[in-house]
Length: 149
Image: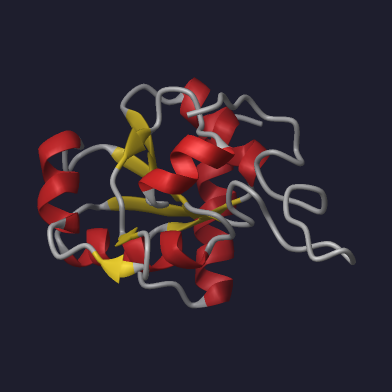
């Protein structure tokens, strides 16, 4: 799939979901776009504890949206994002399951980022029947590159 097709699919999906930002990508689409589109950036908004103990996408920018313990909102999120990612970049947000990254994408769009996408399913995906993540869907279950943080 070409870069243009990936972006068109993401935008169409975003419109169907009624998103307040550019669109939404499945993990494999996000990885393909990251590889094919210069200036695209994956931003991992999980907590530092998750980065350390669960793993990270190689070369992802890390900006906590909420801090562990207590998942306290990071009041400096936008400022920290702006310090690391240019506003003209194509920004792909990822979290554990896609919820915090949706919140981060909304904040980024409101702060003036023009090309903002959420990575659906997140890094670990949904829980399976045994209430464990990482097996049903998401970045890790798709077999995409990741390293231990």
